[in-house]
Image 1 (cartoon, helix red, strand yellow):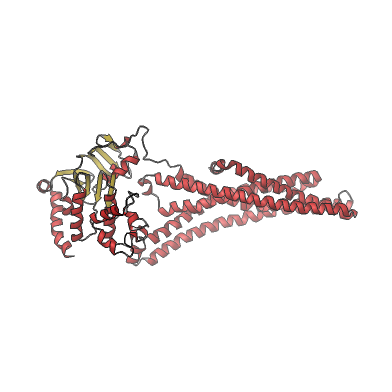
Image 2 (tube, rainbow, N blue to C red):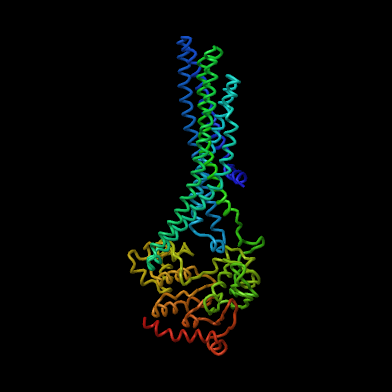
Length: 581
C-alpha cells in the first residue's frame, strides 16, 4: 500500500517532468561541487606539506570557485523545486475541491466537514513538502552517499570498505524505522483530522452551545481530541527518537575505523596526510546524509500517510453523473411523474416505498404528513441529489436519468425551512441562481418574497454583507431571502419545503399572496405544515412511513383521511396561538 501510494504521489510530478529533471540536475551538479571540495582540500594539504605555493594558490581559488558555483546551483535548484511544489499543491487542491463538488449529498451525510478540510489543508501540505523538497533532499543525499563512497573506494579501497561497513546496518535500521513509523504517522493525520472536525463543529454550533451553556462540555470534548492527537504524536516521536539517533550514530563506527587504520597508514608512510584528510572529510560528508536519513524518511512517511487519505477521497467515484446517452431537458409543460419509486438512505430503512403519482404541468401539489414520512425525499430525488433505488421519475416523459444534470437542476429551484446563505451580500445571495440578474430584478424578487422591507433597513441595504450561514439574520428573514432566491431563478419547477415556517402570520399572508402569483403556470411542490400553504395546492398527497396513503383536495381528505383530518384539526387549534404571538 505504501509503495503504491508513493508511486502515485510521484506520478503527480509527471506534468512537471522537465522542471523536476532540471531541479535534480542542478542538485546533482551542486553535489558534484560538494564532493570536489574535499579532494581539492586534500591536494592543498599535500602541497602545503611539500611547500608548493603556486599550486596551493591554484587549489585555493579552485575551492572558492567550487563553493561559489555550489551556492549558485543550490539557489537555482531551490527556486525550481519551490515552483514545482507550489504547482503540485495548486493542482492537487483544485482537483480535490473539484472532486468534492462533484460528489453527491449522500457522501457528505457520512463525512464530517472538518475531516474533509483537514485533508485539503494539512495533508496537502505534507504532500507538498515531500514532493517539493523532501524528494530532492532524498535524491541529493543518495547521490552524496554514492559519490562519497565511490571516491573513498578510489582513494583507498581497503579503507573505503572499512568506512562503509556500517552501511548495511543503517539500511536495515531505516527499513525497520519506516515499517514502524508509517502506521504511526498515518494515525497522526487521522487524529489531526478529528481535532479539526471538532474545532469546526464548535465554531459553527457556537449559538447552540451557548444557548444550552455547554461550553465546558465542548472544551472537554476538544481537550480529548487534542489529547488523542498528543498521545499519537508522542508515539510517533518516540519511534523517531529511538531510530533517528541510532541511524545517526552508526556512521561513527566508520569514522573511528578510518581514524585508526588511516592514522596507522600515515604513520607507516603508506598514505599521505592530505589523502587521509580528504578521506576523513568524505566520510564526514557521508555521515551527514546518513544522520538526516531519518528526517527524510519522516517527510516521506507523512506524505504517504497524507497521500492515502487524499486518494481515499479522490478515488471515490461520483455516484450521480450523466448517462452516456443523456440529453438536455426538452421544453414542455413540466409534468412530473413518479412511478413505483423506492428509496433508502442507509440501505436498511426505507424512506420511500412504491411512491406513484403524477403532477400535471403548471399545477401545484402539496405533500403533507408527519415528520419522517418521506415528504422532503421527493424533491431530492427529482433533482437527482439522491438516486432512487427502484422506479422511474420522468419530467414531460423524459426519464431524469437520461437528462443532463446541467439542464435538469437549473430547471428546479427550492426554498426550505432552514436555508443556507453564503458569506456574501444580500444581493449576491438572492442572485445566486442567476448571477447576471440586474439590481431591479433582485429588488422585484425580494418584494415578491416579502423581504424588501427588512432588507432596505439593513445598514447597507442590498449590499449588506451577511455573516456565516446568514446567522446575522432571523430565521424568517433567511427564509424570505431564500424564497427570493428561488423566485429570481425563475425555475420551471418550484419546491417550497415549509418555506414560511419561521415567519409571523402577517408576513406569511404577504408571502402567500406573492407565491400565489409565482406558482401560477409553474409546476410547484409544497411541503406543507400549515393549512395556509396547503390552500395553494391543486392536489394534496398525504404521506406516512414513506408511502402515499391518501390524495385529493382539502375537503375530500377531511372526509377520507383520518391522518389529514387530524393534521387540519391541529392546525386550526394552533392558528389562534400563532396569530396571538
